[in-house]
Length: 172
Length: 281
Image 1 (cartoon, rainbow over the protein chains, first blue to last red):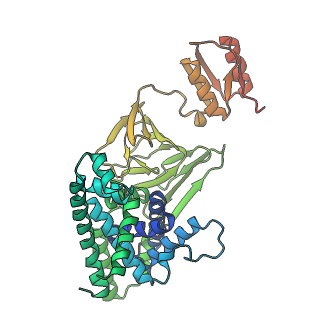
Image 2 (tube, rainbow over the protein chains, first blue to last red):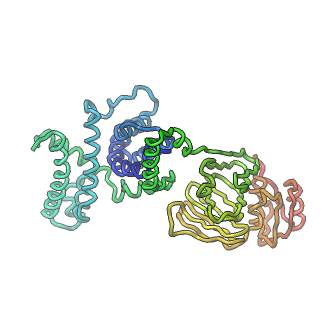
Image 3 (spheres, rainbow over the protein chains, first blue to last red):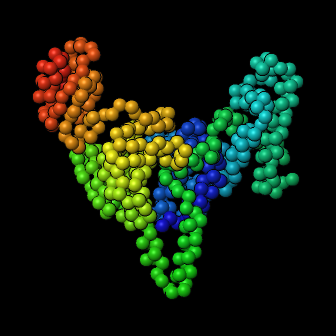
């Protein structure tokens, strides 16, 4: 008999999937690898679960597992596995890293939710590194419209993130 | 928010935007993929109910839970064949599974036959299922499932898809977790699930030699030469090539487990071909 029911397992999966992918992404820098790693880590836990192995803190365990799998993927010879090469991971506690991954996940969802035109402009700017002038020319719209749309896009992303900051540090 | 946080947030937005791809990291899709691959079945309410009932029982009569949980944990019986080996396996209900080489099956000896009869398999195998209308028999491959009441059929799982050939009776064949896209196959029918298109196609031509590995007999009835060569390659696990160019030839013949050389000799003399196994040089 499994330690937790398949319904509970599904809830964990749905809650943790996206943040874990974004967590893995910081190491792997490749979406495909990140998703593979997270799927494999869950498969491993599912097998354990079927064999009635109870994992005390599944969330924390999953972050550990994904981190280890990511590191062994990106550091070819397994010498010293440190996070030295990932500057923004230094000095942050496990809790903080989890919060960061969850915030990244919310940012992703927020981008998902942008209206199509605004999303296009936003991605041309932040993903493809185009200047506002270039975006205006590319899409045949005025630079004013680009500024306007970018302002709205960034505002909604910030609001998404600020909620987390307030929660984390109790800032207004 | 102070400047440092503002900077950090800008960094995070850049990071997420850099990797953003439309439609990716879809939790629903990811879960479906996971559930299909690992055969997670939704048995929540039943299991919860059962667990509650078990605990009450435990409190009331001090019954050892160990016994109950142990009784319900799977007891896998697994059988694997090496390349070239053929093995007949009888399940507890006297259903026969003939396994071709490089194949494996497993079933849970504890739950098998209680409510359903479930077998998981890889590779190629022929099934002769003992009829039992109240306990459906299901075979799961990595992506597909075949469900029957009592019949005989063969499953051939390959990297690019899964073929099912039905000898007698009636079977239901579909991708695991997809209730709508199922086909019902009756005697003589074959269907194929393609990994690429994720769909099922019915195969028109009846294949005389799909069970050759088991019957040790190769039969050809007005069969095009290309198909003959294909069947020989499969049966003898070789690569036969035709050194002469003779288009549109057809063969009618039966070979009862003859050595490849003899078979090639007969075909070459009958059709004036120059078939030979491809040498490694």
